[in-house]
Image (cartoon, rainbow, N blue to C red; front, side, top):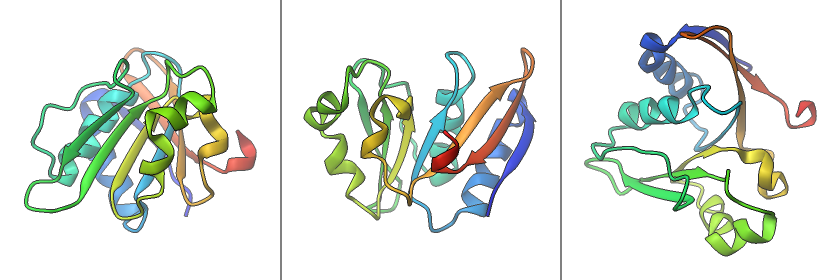
Length: 145
């Protein structure tokens, strides 16, 4: 199922809920967007919807942040690949190991920097900035990247 949504930043929690509702069996998500488009804000909202109680922040320097869903053994990995130089950097950071965990959630910012590690089962979204407060979210196929 494909998804296309237009939302304002104050509607981002509802957008996160819709993503999880529309893709209940998907655990890995990749978000393509320009700097400042709201990738981290959307991932923070997704984590909240899943029941993460920790303070969710961008893992720009650590590359990977790990969170626990309250009352569950399921983990949420938030990855920011912005600082990766290549696929070898991603593998060294442990990205490949995390992507092989089918039951945990994984949200990826800047996935294009190690695209070859992404499998076909990862749900890909493109976020476009329409205005200062308005965004458009579209699910994309791997071949349209």
